[in-house]
Length: 353
Image 1 (cartoon, one colour):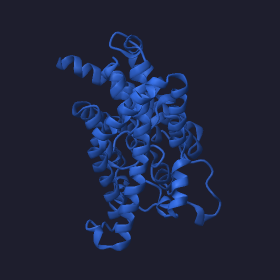
Image 2 (cartoon, one colour):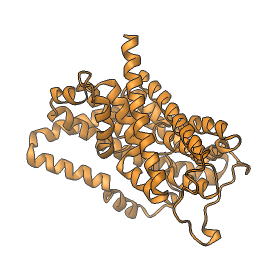
Image 3 (cartoon, one colour):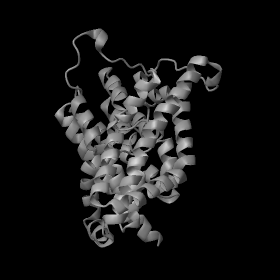
């Protein structure tokens, strides 16, 4: 996950406080607490205690995740991602899948980079591989998922991320070789200077000891503030929603719809993930809660991977960027890949057991 550069411009603290309080996630959380107080006042204290305890448990891992993201931004290491798209198409697809699983971009944050690469003529196959893999996993999400759900699930999700990127990239590569999917972007600006530019061969200056540069040091702390706020607000909302699930969602309902006994659990998890998936970080405690309520591991894998790729905010951003055929292929690859990942994970667990 990477915070847009324009967010690094600091405003006076009263303005920032007003922006924080007016944030849609904060407003949603506040309205949720008020609605809960009106419906079941006794549950408010229990939900707040649950949220606070969960945040306290996650705090060390959250701080580590924020530090990783801020270091990548301040040092310039995030710009090394461009190197994955140079060379032979098949090699580029493999590299893009691997780099996508390690890159600090969310499903919406990756859009500007994708637009720049496609606008400059980078082949769609490695771009699609990166596009599919990037929002599913990144270093800070690995840490938080391992803490919130478990290391085994996190490793399996990482493998699924790379596999989904590879599948998407090679499918698109095969289609491209038939002469289809030319010019995937929607109409670009007529002004040449307005077109995004991308040069994978351009030198990248990475300052591993960024703290020696005052500008980079300031960028690091700005990124810590913005990423910390971003992760913190979403995790707070997620833990509050998890407290409501624990209190009100019947265990037998979860077990019946997406449990081991339902043969359609994995496809249903893929479809449910589209409208209900909030955010990659917010999904961690939600999935942990659903697993505790009886959700099958395969369905959980499908939910957390399909939601990252095809959630409504991500889908809207993709639809605004590329042609309808590319958008449809993106959605199809994301959903089918997530279901295959879910079936494979469920099968592997049954074999191990």
